[in-house]
Image 1: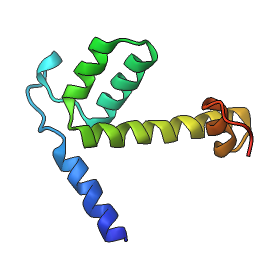
Image 2 (image 1 turned 90 degrees about the vertical axis):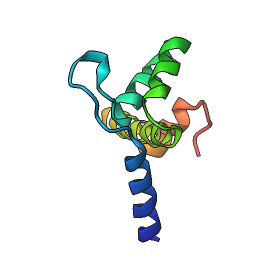
Image 3 (image 1 turned 30 degrees about the horizontal axis):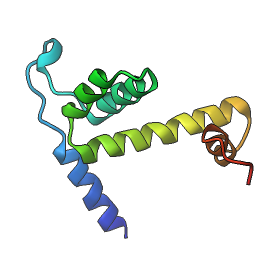
Image 4 (image 1 turned 180 degrees about the vertical axis):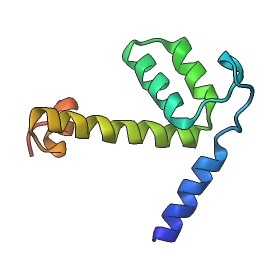
Length: 98
């Protein structure tokens, strides 16, 4: 199982574009930059920025980055609220307490 997970993660990481030039918009973005830009654009309902961020990495890499961002956000909110991550996630989605 861990071999499959490692292989999948390696595929996502290798799908991220190689870094280009070192100035401004010329350089490639990593999957976490893309995820942060994509999610913040979604929160602000900015389709143009969402499309731009989605073009920085492969769809698989973006999905992985967004998932990782969601996990980290739920953990941070749970610590801040002194609640379980499950309770926070359900509250964010408007689900009843389990």
